[in-house]
Amino acid sequence: MHEGGGIVGNAADAVTGRASTRLLPLVITLFFAWGFCTVLVDVLIPKLKATFSLSYAEAMLTQFCFFLAYFIVSIPAGLLISRIGYLRGIVLGLLIMAGGCLMFSPAASMGWYPAFLAALFVLAAGITIVQVAANPLAAGLGDPARAHSRLTLAQAFNSVGTMIGPLFGSAMILAAGVAEPEAGLSAAALEAFRVEQASHVRLPYMIIAAVLVLLAAVCWWVRRSPMPSVRPVGHGDYFRLLGHPRLSLGALSIFLYVGAEVAIGSALVNYLIMVGATTSEHAAGNLISVYWGLAMVGRFIGSYVLRFVAPGVVLTVCAVSAGCLGLLAGVVLEGLPAAVAILSIGLFNSVMFPTIFTMSIDGLGEDTAGGSGILCLAIVGGAVVPLLTGVVADQVGLALALLVPVACYACIAGYGLLVRMGWLESRGKQAAAPGQVP
Image 1 (cartoon, helix red, strand yellow):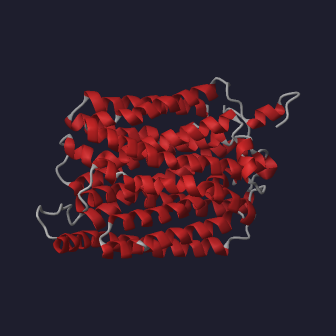
Image 2 (cartoon, helix red, strand yellow):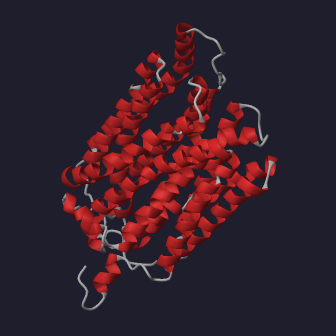
Image 3 (cartoon, helix red, strand yellow):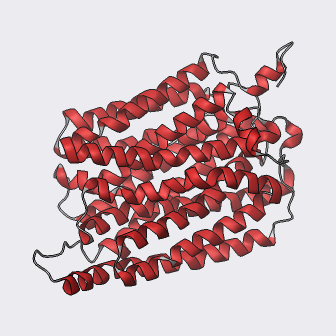
């Protein structure tokens, strides 16, 4: 039994039948695409860290710039989509993503770290627009009672992308090795070294850009298909929506979850080498796919389990389990057991994002686009928590820095418990109560 009512307010708002059958696979493809693009940052980090001789904190600026886009773009994206519709917004987002991918070519030619950060920001800006549209669209394409399960299924294919992405990135970016510049190089020699090392990044992103343009063309072709209803929103609506504790605390949980997930994924290559699970950056990069592959498996399982088990219960159990594994990896275990523990966190990360997301927008109806914008803004946690983890790692070591995401998981477990206990009613339930105004 699920807490709350339907994600899109009522059955009349959901798109069913042939339109849902045709559009849902396309929307699921979008989840795959941005998962694939997002996880490549985990592979980029060890390459850029070595090439530009960065500290952990400086290397985490890649994630900071990437996820900062969510904070800057999410609200404008929600405003835009509420006016031009889901599919047109998705087309625009895909084209911006392709533009960000193309920016990696001049960044590699310059061998300049800030140029890579700029390319990552533009790529993430496009992903933000796509995500603000695709999450509520996936929830609304069908029976509202199955929204939790449907969005978790879509997120499972997002995890397929995050599992395949590291293998692609490792083969294209890390296979040639990770080299640091020798001490005493002249300025010209250092510049030439960085350009040569950065050139390994160019081709994979050119391939991705071509695929994104093709996907945008398909979305443009079906742009007139029936869509869930969406009400135009203004800036004032966001402040009004934040007055709903279930949404505002859900946004905080999204902030903490994405931050914890990204912090662990970003540290994996260096952590696995540090504990002796492997001595090769290429092999460690391949092991990232295990982390994300377990998330994929967990989401397929979760899409079934959430048909029968309350999402608040599922979220609490998964957050507690992930926190315990992080504690073991950071404080207790060493060697192969530590590697197994940290990789296994991916299994319990699996259902957190879609479960938090659907619980947070439960009952918003035509305000769903605005609620989605707020939740996607909270993805900026992927910028803040990894940077904080990097700063802590520079001070006390990478293992103890895992206590930062452990604290995040503890807070997420609290949100799941509050929802399960009925202390954070959805707006749909509030509207149903006598004497209350939605």
